Amino acid sequence: MGGNDGTLEALRELRRHLDHDLFPLAVGDAEADRRALRELTGQLDDYLIPRLSAIDAPLLAVVGGSTGAGKSTLVNSLVDADVTEPGVLRPTTLAPTLVTSPADRDWFVSPHVLPGLPRVTGGGQGEPGTLRVVVAEALPPGLALLDAPDIDSVVAANRELAAQLLAAADLWLFTTTASRYADEVPWGFLRAARERSTALAVILSRVPPEALGLVAGDLNRLLEVNGLGGTRLFEVPELQLPRENARLPRAAVQPVADWLTGIAADAQARADVVRQTLSGALDSLATRVPALADAVDRQRAGAGELRAAVDAAYAAGLATFDEGMLDGSLLRGEVLARWQDFIGTGDLMRSLESRVGRLRDRLVSLFTGRPAPESELRVALEHGVEALVRAAADGAAERALESWSSLPAGRALLERTGAVAAGRLGRASAGLRQAAEEAVRGWQGYVLDLVREEGAERRTTARVASFGVNGIGLLLMIAVFASTGGLTGIEVGIAGGTSVLSQKLLEAVFGDQAVRTLTTKAREDLRLRVEEILGDEAARFTGLLDAVEPPEGAARALRAAVSAVRDGGGIRGGIPAGAVPEGGSAPAVEAAPDGRDAIPAEGVPAEGVPGREAGDR
Image (cartoon, rainbow, N blue to C red; front, side, top):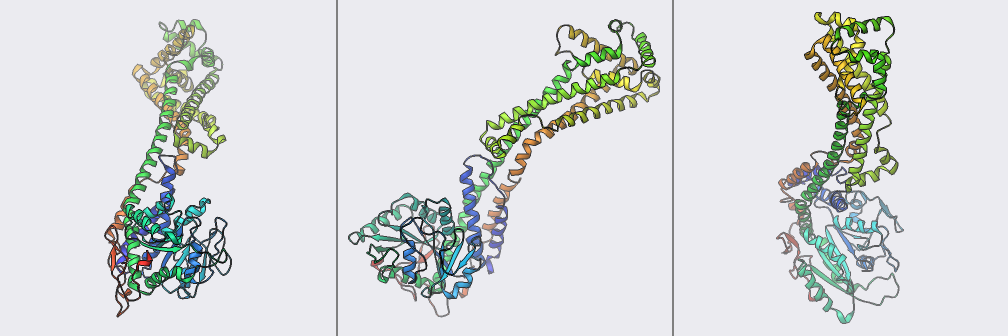
């Protein structure tokens, strides 16, 4: 590898950052982003890393093109053996066939190139998803031919495989016909070859004798218009063959065979092909990887929008709880009834403002004369607070589900989750009831601890002992829900009296400032417990995002990795000096459109590399 070590390690680091599912959400054109990711990952695995690891390895020329372009027939004719099976049925090529010389067989049988395709050797066509490797004695060492599936196959897997194979090639032998050379699908691939400066030759087959030269001239014009001027072009005439799978006469493919033999025989010619294609593929990373990084940023922004929707929904749920805690609505119904049982008669309530001291004495008598129904009040408070928590959680879940359903990314994520699971997300979880019970009981314990702590002071010890910690604790719990904003009519008077009563009794025991402090602490503690519960409920939504969202910093890592590839120095100086045999001469090259070296120039004689003659075009 020599000077390529830095670039190779940078490519491997880049590849590691592509292992994640970077585009799980329906954000922007996510399908195109996923396709671009597959293409880049495939080219790194199938070409860039293997080729840079063994830069002087045999060339791989992929024969690709449209349906019925005669790719298999061409390969058989070039190697003078029936190594593939052309036919009239489509798709013909079920598994790609790689044809190698005996000298290069071991290289291509091992997973140096296209490591994701299992090798199959011997007879038969091979199964889809495999790479069939056959040996042809007539093929010179240093070059292998790969018969790819149709780029416009009706089978999507074949189209994807064809694109993968072309991205793994050192050299494209792009085959089209006189009747289909202007189709858009082939030109999409040819433009990709131009953008990546891939070494390329076009083979125009099935040209009627009377159209020889005319069709090639028009195709050359189109190549020029599409930025591919100077691309080597071969014509193969339309011929009547004795049978469907017969080979073409040697004379029809001799110009192509001579050109390939010349490249295979000259180490510098092979090096030029590698340099052109490898440099183009490396240079393409400068635009492809940042584009992927931008798409990753869009994914994370989409995930952020979904998280914000959940946060807003559960913040509204907490606001609902806050309102229910302060508007006095908790003090209606069962809590009011149990409160009246706890403090005695209504007449006693009406005398509170002027006779707080007498009330204290009555309560002491009440507590010591018979068991107070404090446990019933505590249970009623528990149930009231639990119901308030459930209502807040249900409302938040419904709002979060509605928000996600209105966003393409959220809708797709819910669909992936499944209708049943998504439906459950629209209401509080099954575990909420137990969580709320535990939170309320924990809060009640905290309130009692506050009372004990405050009652430990000498000035209040006797007064707290008079009422009992549990009794004072219940008064403080009632004081937490001191407002009456949510009540009407007679309930206002009752609840208001309840609030005033608890407030006055607490002030008589602790003093007004201490009561305000205790009430604030108790209210904040309950709110924090409910906030934690709602956070756990929200995690049902955000957990779905956590499972799929691209890692934080993924886009930044991609940009840094491609910068490291650029800083690695490319392949400058990477082609071994020994690539040109001692005493051999390197062929002149024509410049590629971006100024990099191209494959041997037309008409320039070099040892082992034939110049292009007029009949080649």
